[in-house]
Length: 170
Ligand code: FEO
Image (tube, rainbow, N blue to C red; front, side):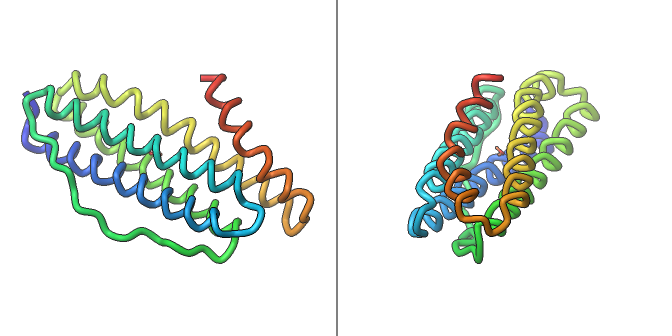
């Protein structure tokens, strides 16, 4: 059985994962209408789907443990971005925020000696290591490319392969 405070903290995480899904959906939609960013759009559509899966896993866990997962209302995310660089900076910033929230949850689970929740959260800890790594690498690549058009062309072309390669390494 989940304690009240753990249930509340997990419900907050459900909200955060839902907000992540919305935020990346907005990024996908923005990229979708920019010329030549089809790969980036696809990357964020997929990223949005993954965040929904993160949310669903939490919902199932809370309910299985005798709690009640509440589906949250959501505020509108940032919908326009001034540049590709800005878009990826927001992506990294968002993931760093999610990592911090997961770490706090792990901390709470330990404090309350809720080892089942602690164990469940380890999947999210590993996931965040990967997500942060990807976001950092993509930001580094963009920094190197700068305004170089052919570099940007290749970045957009390769971004989906990049995801596949990372998934294969898991
Ligand atoms: Fe589920 Fe990317 O955090």
